[in-house]
Image (cartoon, rainbow, N blue to C red; front, side, top):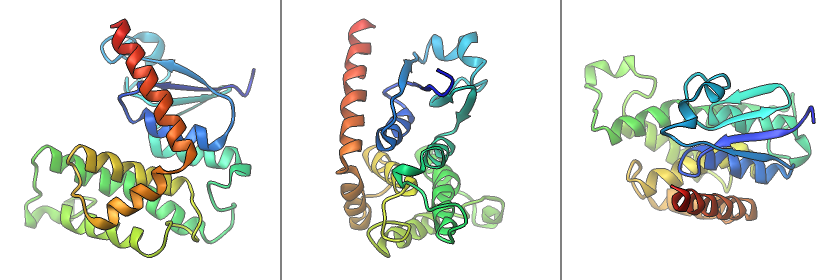
Length: 211
C-alpha cells in the first residue's frame, strides 16, 4: 500500500515513544525490529536513516526520523486523532514551543547531566539550555500551569514531554519532583500508552529469548 505506516524500532529505545504515538493515532502500522549490533547498522537501514539510530517512520514513500518530528508528523497526518491544534490556530504556538523545548534544551541538559558534564557559568551563553537547573525549572513551570500543555487538551506535545519526564526519572537523568511525577502519572495512564508498553515489553522478551 502506498500509504503504509512502518515503524523501525527497538523496544529498548526511544522507539517506545513513537509506538505510543502510533497507538494514539489509531491507524494500522507494521513494525520492523532492529538489533543494535547488526541490522541497525546494516546498509538496508542506513539507507533509511544514515545515523543508524531508531526510531524511524516510513509512511508510503515518506521517511521521518527524530522522535519529536515523528510525533509532530503523525499528529498532522491524522488530524482526526486531535493530537495537535489545527493549522492556523494560535495554540500551535505553545504546542510547538514545548514539543521542541523538550527535544532541544531538555534533551541536551539531561544528557549532559547523565554524562556528568556541567556547563561552566561563563560558557552558559554558548549552550541552548543555559544550565541544567534553569531548563528543568522552566519545564516544571510549564507542566504545572494546567493538566496539559496546550489548551487543557492532551496533544503530541504532552506525549513527547511526558515520555522525557517518565524515562528521565526512571534512569536518574531527571530529579523526581512532585510535579513531574503527577504529570507523568496522568499522561501515562492513557490506554494507548498502556497498549504500546505491553507491545514493546512483549517484543523485548521475544528478542531476549531469540538472542
